Figure 1: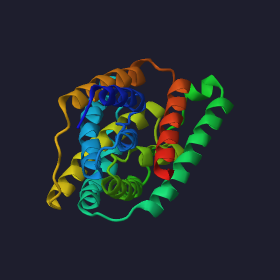
Figure 2: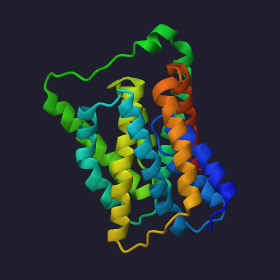
Figure 3: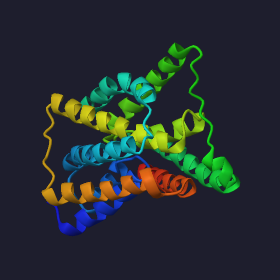
Length: 253
């Protein structure tokens, strides 16, 4: 069911997405759909490829010193069971996919606009709003956000990074590379939870060909290394806008 041309395309997608802390599920789903693969194969396969790329991305961003354990824990504590629930359910998703597609498109536009509107000095010194004052409220808010995003990720068959990233950026809770690092780990645990939920519902989990797994692993390693260590912040923000724009188009069309 898989071919090397498909593997090469998915490797490119993995590299682009991994550079901003994402794992590429929305891109994989779009390409595999265009490739004519059956829907029952596409959703779990996208999550499995997500696990591979997100695991590599998490290691790279942690190595670079960008990871925030407190922020990740606050988001993940409720997102994992919510993602498992979303993966267990099989509901029509057309309406909220359209709404999310428009939201992601707007987020992409704002990222591009703000990137060109801000001087380099502003990009190098992004504000951080993680305050210790009344931390339980902040943890509760992020737990709620994690639960919503986790449920959506399990329901749609994606890791949730495309939903989480624009919210974290808009809230200004962390620097861009920290958001990317936390998103990668968030995608990893929620993709695993989504697969578990699907398995609990009795849906078969297909095994992707080794060429697909190897291709996204190479692409994910290259992209996450560049995003964690090399790409300037302005370029990283523009890449993130591209990723959100692709996700928006996929959800809308």
